[in-house]
Length: 489
Ligand code: HEM
Image (tube, rainbow, N blue to C red):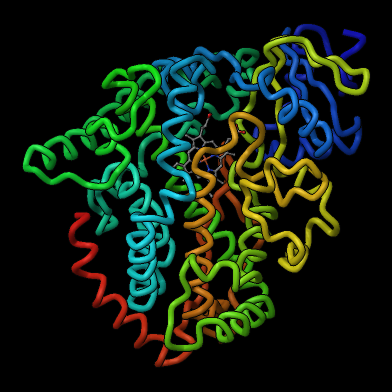
């Protein structure tokens, strides 16, 4: 005990459990770091949690000793809700390793930028048309587009409408709904009525299994009709991707593809909505982006991912949005496999290890609370390249996690947010909404709903085409892609 990192004073039995807040844990994790040091520990009953709010500690432990921090904490509630199969929470054994390898190959930058590039661009162009026609519904259009891109990649089916089956996959119950704080085992210390009941976890499991099974059934039926597509599931079924060890039907359908869909759709949409919010609050950033876009694409051409190297300021905007409001503010916790040491402090075997993404982003970046895309003008490497750079002090952000459990959708997530950011800025002005008296409607950069992920609460903005010419280009591009998109329905 005496070698543990410092932390708040404990009380008998509870340890620090009574100090855990019900909301805004991300702010508390930062506050404790300011008080007790960047690496600190908490006692939750008999368990130890170690928080690493320091780039050096994350590098030394999560990257250099990654094999020790590759597991997730063991939690009964998680097991009930996922049958122990979910990619997110799986024990880091052979099945998890097999899933990681398949995801790494299927969602590599090469695959995404090959045959699948055109369909991602087309979906985003459709999004622009939707914004043009129904700007007030920008939130649901953004969610539909993000979930559609994911279902095309995973299942070969797009979500043409917000009220159809493929969009409804987004309603798969997220870990956050049955794990409000269970990831930090405080719930075991609270009276029964406050606990997330086991029933909730079990019903999350049944709901998700039925959604993911239906997705699989749709793919199986279309394949029976000879319609074979370029999706991850199609390639798995055809043996074009060969798992190192055989995965059962349920492991592929629920634990792997289902979990990937859960991890993909909302995260990318929320990251884009954060950029929309901060861009509305910072018209000067929009103006600077437009100058770059006009120089590279003019009015005639919609920007594409292949323009990325020539549009560095767009990449800065994407990175700054991911930094200032990370989508998973407290990360997903890890479990220490063995005792290890950091600067004379013990991280004991079985400790829950937390990399507090929001706290890191708001401690180590100059004027961290200020939205300033320019901070990235000398760091245009991808998030993936940044995650493994040896000069860890210059890492762009931790929004996709750390170490060996780094988000396997990092390339797809980054591309989706980049494409949306470039296209919306090229085509539209994002203006503050005005009320009936002509006054700006209040926009708060802090109005977020925070559970396991952080989602900006619905906010009002006006999304206005920059010129009639821009609107015409959107309409003509959308007419061209209608037929192309049809083949994914
Ligand atoms: C902006 C978009 C995204 C963000 C911010 C994001 C963030 C994260 C974070 C923070 C983690 C935890 C990493 C860790 O434990 O260190 C994670 C894990 C994961 N993400 Fe993402 N993600 C995004 C997009 C995606 C996409 C597009 C997919 C799949 C197509 C995906 C699938 C997953 C999966 C399966 C895991 C669990 C991996 C494991 O435990 O081994 N995510 N993501």
